[in-house]
Amino acid sequence: MKNGEKEKFAGLKKVEVVDDHLGVTFPVFVMYPTRTPEKEEFIGPYSLNVAKDAKPQDDVFPLVVISHGTGGTPLVYRTLARHLVQNGFIVAMPEHPYNNIHDNQLENSVTLLESRPGNITQTIDWFKGDDLFKNNVNFDDISIIGHSMGGYTAIAATGGIPTTLPWETDNQVPEVIDLKVEERIKKVILLAPALGWFRNEGALEKLNLPILMMTGERDEITPYFHAEILLKGVGNTEKIESRTIDDAGHFSFLSPFPKEMKKSSFPPSQDPAGFDRELFHQELESDVLNFLLS
Image (cartoon, rainbow, N blue to C red):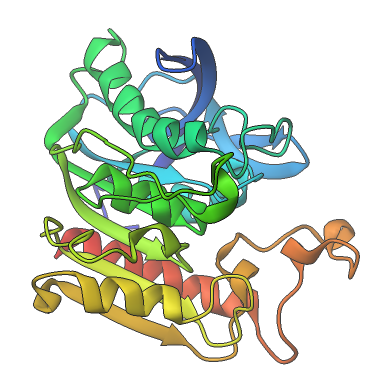
């Protein structure tokens, strides 16, 4: 640390945001720069050095929203979030209602396709109305990171027009989902995105944002054809930076799990043979940060 430079700490606050579409509230983990020293905290099964409920640093920061995968949890992106905070970002990690590790009853439903993008807008709106944070967010510099189903969420929120898959409607007739575009989002990062809902002609023509997309070479859940849907569907591919990560699997983009959680019976903790998740995440953090700062 240079002389005169203050140490950078990450604050953590869990808040509740209203989903007016579903008529419920959902938790959002907010990580943010603070001057309060960190200490080890256990958040769910994970250990993280943070300053819980600390006062935000008096400054204005870009906002990044992270959207988790289906049946997942925002906590599996904790290390990426903390890295961004330490480099001057506020990070919001919503737990999508009825599509998370605790309650996944909306999986494979039209309601989920409608509500997930709305959760992003609701999260951004929460910051606009919160007395603690509203003066700390640069609302002209908002980005979204989406992993797996979070990739659907990111694209649906920023101009993609999704169409249901056969098993998502009772009559199996395709239904176009009408969504409002979240125009406050300026950049998109996709990690092993699920994009099968955007195969119809014209579904991605309105998408015109800088996009960083990373896919796993050995991803069997969202293989490369999902990335191809985006690359073939957008009007301007020059704004897309697409990379395939050698030997990576679908879950390689999740924060490394504690040793006691690394079991063959727990697929999110597993990677293809020979893949070093810890080493990759150093590169991932750097690449994501560089893209957001570019």
